[in-house]
Amino acid sequence: MSKDEKEKNKIIDQFVGRKIEQLRVARGLTQQQLADVIEYESATAISHFERGERSIRAQDLTKLAAFFCVPISHFFPQTDKQTSSEKKEEFVLKLRANYEKLDKRVVDSINDFAMKARKKFSK
Image 1 (spheres, one colour):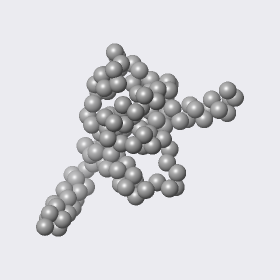
Image 2 (tube, rainbow, N blue to C red):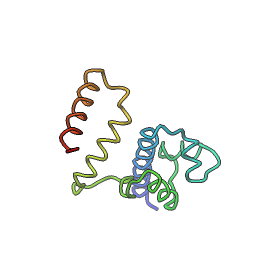
Image 3 (spheres, rainbow, N blue to C red):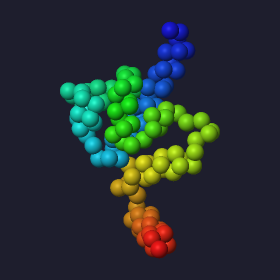
Image 4 (tube, rainbow, N blue to C red):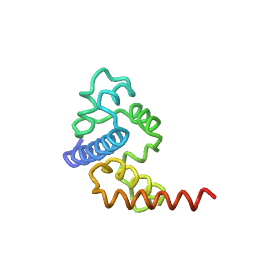
């Protein structure tokens, strides 16, 4: 494997790792709980995956995709052909992961919007 290929693989491993971490944090799971999902004994492997230090096996990525109810493609860089549904899903995951960091005014605005949307679409 050439140096360029190794570098590309490392970048992909880091990207996949960030996606795994985002999904884990959004669900409020520990690394150990996620390790249990893919039948690893310790959280160390999850830590390595999240930091991009180790490549995850395809079968384990498939288990994670099923667990998080996302397509396998969710874990990889998207092209410009990313659907609006995928963009919305990504936004929701980011919002969930960072909700506690938002100031009260923003949270109130989000809650107000959600209540109005529920009223409008529950008819």
